[in-house]
Every structure is written in structure tokens, then in C-alpha cells.
Length: 277
Image (cartoon, rainbow, N blue to C red; front, side, top):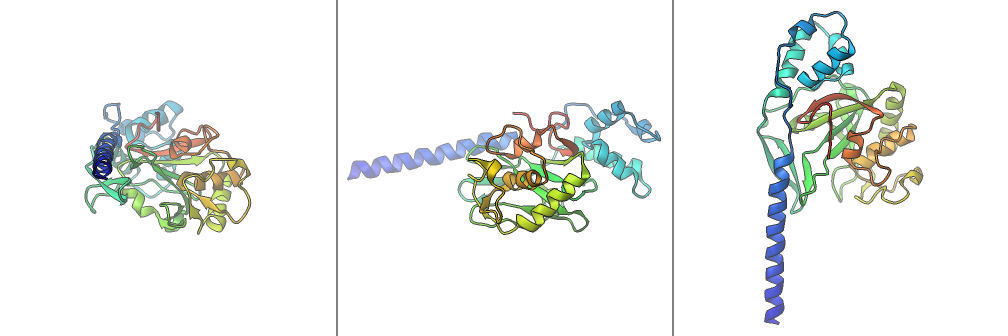
């Protein structure tokens, strides 16, 4: 009996040490600063029309894609100052802390203080939000959500085991030290995906196995189960666009690297490489 108890204690201690090591290794890989050096971009901001090379250059200096730059251009005065603020934000190191959101397995990084918030470009209905700041036992799976009401800053998300999917606030995404915003080229598809998520994907049970088997046949309503990236995939699949890169269990990384989606904004990611392995 004593031997069994001793073995159980040793096994538990080993497991705890393994968990600590996995978290320690994982927490070093959350955020990436741009590889390009910060340079003066003011001469580009004075141009009435930018070419493709200009947009790529600004992407690597600010984290802003073409559509975000043009949305900001149509806003009120202060276009140049706004773009320069995004450039400073993109190149500035960020302090963040990591806390449990589901003890003892899942942790999430957030910017260090409540005063820290990242500035976002204008959002549209159907925009996809992705962070890699969530990890479980050393596996950096990330998190994903879909904007369903940009004017009110509302998303639909599936967050945790035991919690049904719900309408949430975009505001929490300004606390992550890593963020991608993606959107399809066809605005009608984005609108349809947002409408489907709002009408059919709220109040669905969480399951990390959702979509593991025959996910392409899971169009029956009401939905029985979902998880964060499966919810986003399901909304777009219902709108006629498959945004899963590998055709198996859909993860935030699969959506991040989907070629059917254009990059709107990157923070803590390499803007061109997105989420490479």
C-alpha cells in the first residue's frame, strides 16, 4: 500500500513539474516584433494614390493591410498622424502577464496593465479576430472570434469548456499582446457569415472535438457543439467559404494562414508570415 502511495506521489510531482516546464517554454513564444527596422514613412502618406509596393511597405511598417489603410484614409482629418501612431505601436515592445483562465491547464497572456490597450483599425461585420496568446499545457492553440456588429463592437465567440458560445465585446481583444484581423475579399460573404453566427451560433455548447469528424456535414441546425475556431469556420462555411487550411480539425492557426482571407491588421505577429509554424 505504501509503495502505491509513494508511486502516486512521485507521478503527481512529475506531472506538476512537466506542466510547469511546458508553460515556461510556451510563454516565451507569444509575441513577435517586426523584423523590419522602423523607418520614415511620411513621404508615402502624402501620396494621393498608393501602389502595391507602397501597401506592402506600409504593412511591414505599421501592421496595417491595404483595406485598413484605405478605411483610415476616408475618416476625418489626421490620416498621417493615425498611420504614424500605428507604426509606433507596431514597433514598440509590449509588457504582458500570463494568468490562468481554466486552472490548471489553460493560460492566457494579456497586456500588463488595464491602461494598456492596442489601437484597432476600423472593423467590419464578418471580420475574424485571432490571437495566439492562449495556450494549454504547452500547446499554443490561440483563440478566434467573429465580429457580428462592428458599429457596437460585438463578437460571437466560444471560449471555454462548460460555457456556451455568446456575444462578447471587441474591447477584450485590445488587451492581447498578439492579434490578427482578417476578412474575405467578398464583403457579401462576410455579411452572411456574421448574420449566420449571430442567428445560429449563440448559445452552443463548447467541445474541443467539434469538427474533428465529418465537420463538412455539420450544417444541421441547431448546432450541437463548437469551439472558438470551429465557430468562425462554421459561420463562413455556411456563407459558402471554407477557411480551414488543412481540412481536418480547424484551429486558429489554420484560419490565420488561409489564403482566401486578406490581412487587415497584425500586432505581435509578422505581418507577411502571419502564423507560421
